[in-house]
Amino acid sequence: MEIDFAKIEKVYFIGIGGIGVSAIARMMLAEGKTVRGSDTSPSMITLELEKAGAHIDIGQDVHFIDSDTDLVIYTIAIAEYDKPLLEKLQASSVPIISYPEALEIISKNKFTIAVSGTHGKTTTTAMIAHAMIEAKLDPTVIVGSMMLDVKSNFIAGKSNYFLAEACEYRRSFLHLHPTILVITNIDADHLDYYKNLVDIENAFGELAERIPVDGYLICNTADTRLASVIARCKGTVVDYMEYGDSPIDLSLPGKHNQQNAMAALSVLATLGVAEETTRGALETFAGTWRRFEYKGMLNSGALVYDDYAHHPNEIRALIAGVKEEYPGLDIVLVFQPHLYSRTKSLFSDFVDSFTGVSEALFAPIYPAREPFDPSISSHMIAEALTKKGVDARSFDSFASIASYLAETATDHDIIITVGAGDIFQVADSILDTTEH
Image 1 (tube, rainbow, N blue to C red):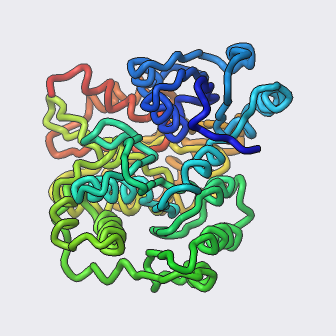
Image 2 (image 1 turned 135 degrees about the vertical axis):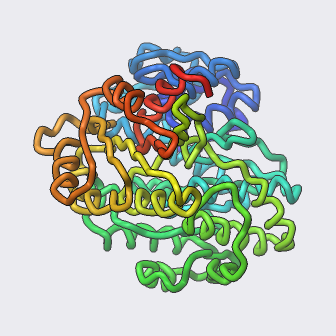
Image 3 (image 1 turned 180 degrees about the horizontal axis):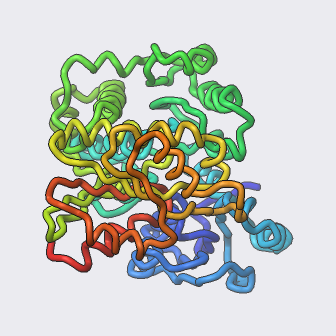
């Protein structure tokens, strides 16, 4: 089915509150199209879309979609959580495409810079976007979080450059046509879809095969998990670790963010931008929503941060970065596991990842698209950590976590709410009750 976005006047989005889908919705609004969409509940994203002119329906129902709608764009998550809705959409007369298919339509006619990887792709995409804007390259950008300096996950550029975060879930990134592909790293994740790590590596290899002969793969060439991926690339391979000799003065802590910045330097160098220009831009990079985002200070003097880390290796990198930035503070990590399947398949790794915190507090598992699984729980992680000598405890609600923190936090603490669900609400609630 050939879809020409230029001819679309009225579009409906299923899952419009999703960070990726909402970016396409913003693009359509910027182009003057009539935008309507639905999601299961209101959120900061849907509220901001309403301010921008979108009409938002709460709930998921095909009856929300007007008969004169030109196109429906849906989140691929509904294939998991609402198959009957997807079947009804497919049976309707209105053309429908998935979010990855929408990205493909944008990508195929532009110079696409795709940023992929199990960890760090959001921050790296935002770093590249900030540097490209500072270098006057005027890109169109879709990133998987709100960029704090522009307060959006979408930037409408006028050049032919299209910078997009490339998500590996369900191989959705294979819809992109990258001239430049960044791979930050490859790790075991999304094991509810992928068979194993080899299957994940193969998906990245398929993406690398899409790079043209005159294109570029930017990665850490010493990473053994990338060996088979690099072998499938027809273009030029660039090692971003070559920029590791001189650290960049970033606002974000941690070795992992230095490596994200190295990848950004490599991309801008490939585009012909002088290194000093890129370094200067990266030093002013403000960060993104929920990536070690400073939230405020409690009356007790405790600092409060929020972070999206939801994989054991992301948690390890976060803790290492915090220790580097705040060596004298006690880390109180408030974690909400994301998905029953991820928590179960990586259970031992999760337990090991909390080494170095003063206290680990656990909220119930955020199920997202998955049905309840009684065989796994946050309490089990806390129990395993306690046996290892870590001060850990689980809670039944956000309110009980907030009450505990209100009673125990001191000026020696840095409290970090962590996870891919809605755990940030704990940070917001404890700050709402104090001066900061």
